Length: 91
Image 1 (cartoon, rainbow, N blue to C red):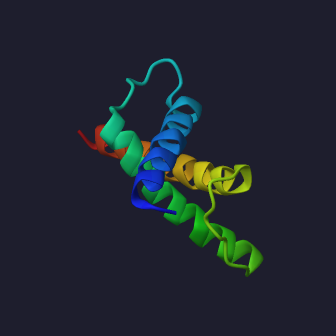
Image 2 (image 1 turned 90 degrees about the horizontal axis):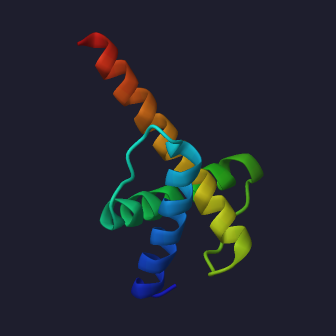
């Protein structure tokens, strides 16, 4: 995928992950954070996909790639939410 496609893909995936993990009480993140979460989540999703299946995931702009990337972004946001909750409990 080209650079612009990665930005669009990351924005869509980051937004989807934020909607799934965010819930009603969590404030929405900005566009740049959504892109970053989407791109990092796509990389994490690819690593998880390879760990569980043993196959490499090719990144085309299609529904299966978006699903793997969204799952990775959801895992990333859930981990970040868990870390934030642990740090709030310590204070």
